[in-house]
Image (cartoon, rainbow, N blue to C red):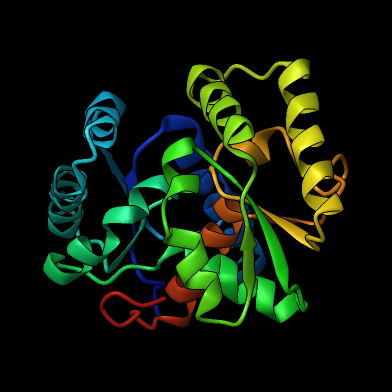
Length: 240
């Protein structure tokens, strides 16, 4: 079997990037043999730099940070890139146009899985920046899927708990309960699944404790990267 492609991970927050990396390594053996996984390189700018750009609405700055990581990973020998952070995909168009390597797009991966499972109306959980953006509504709409967002107050509280707790590796029972409450509300609004659109949310929410079936963006992206690497097919620029 030819050697798998080299996966480059453009990291943003540590917990989400670590889960993506662990998933690639843990599940590689099922495709490649015991203890085997593709070569993986990871680069991260400081999360504080990303947050500063997001707070001032500077998507060019976000793109610049992502591209700096992309260039370093290209020099490290990566064949294609993934970013296990939904929020900064707001800058994906700028990044894809200037990137030295092709990327998988996390929302496209999630949308593909949702369509394959037959879901039609998806709730969205994520940071306040992501939920206010068109990353998921636009991507889901292109596949004929509907995106339902939490109420503004819920969005802000979810965002606060993500940034104050989850990205720091703090997992509180009351936060699990709050996220479960919001998901139950999305179910009442007619959603048939929920997108865990922050890569840390799958660390506390899963099918076993959610009122709706979950679409785990972190693990779905990791598995798409693993399949791409094993199949040896570089994605076209800007597409999954």
